Amino acid sequence: MLYVNNLKKAYKNGKTTCEVLKGISLSVAKGEFVGVMGPSGSGKTTLLNCISCYIPFEEGEITLGGEDISRLSEADLALVRNQKLGFVFQDFLLLDGLTVGENILLPRIISGNVDQEMEKRADKLCEVFGIGSIMNKYPAEISGGEKQRTAVARALMNEPLLILADEPTGNLDSKSSRTVISSFEEAQKNLDATIFMVTHDSFAASFCDRVIILKDGAIYRVVQKSDNRSAFQDGLLKVIKEMSGDLL
Image (tube, rainbow, N blue to C red; front, top):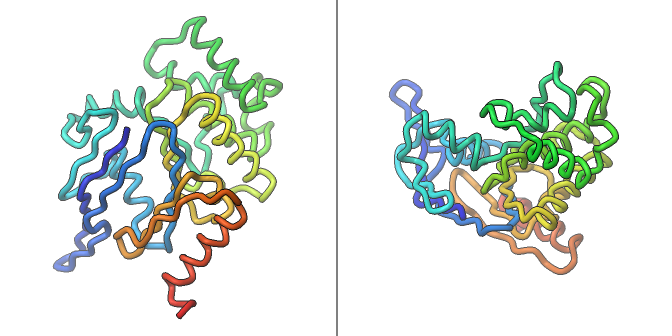
């Protein structure tokens, strides 16, 4: 599904070059829920932005659904982002002047392709994520958790190959965070969604199938899901502490 090969990204500040990604290679299988963790400055968000080709990179290849998207023109990339990628952001990025239902349909509105079939899909997504009762409300009238579930539904509107989620629980309380993670679980289970999530939250990460931990722009370790979610979360925290030198 997604293959990242030897990805390198650096920023220049005058004569100083800062390597942010140092040859990252990874893959995400169809239907998999993969998390990315690491301290501030480890390259998490840069990795996400490179995968979506929103920022250029010096070396490497990014293949999505068998297509090398790192070689595409801006026009072709715009189509990929609209049709093959779904995005969920920390700040929701819903349009205040549109209802929940209209926000969910937005990818189709942008492409000029709204029909009865798509409206039925929007209804189905609202049912899956438990937001059918607020379809006619505006973002200002709903909670943070409801906003993020709306954002997840919107990300799935075009049946993308991959959802990229950047700190999706970062602005939410614990109850709303659990609701949003449940939305990802529902998307994975009922819609066969493939999710790549950057997070600092070990609780959110503990629902992933595996978690890639970055340190200084490189993969420090990959932690696989265990049968016990709490034990998985404890394992993630242990690796984070070990990485930061708290465990000797």
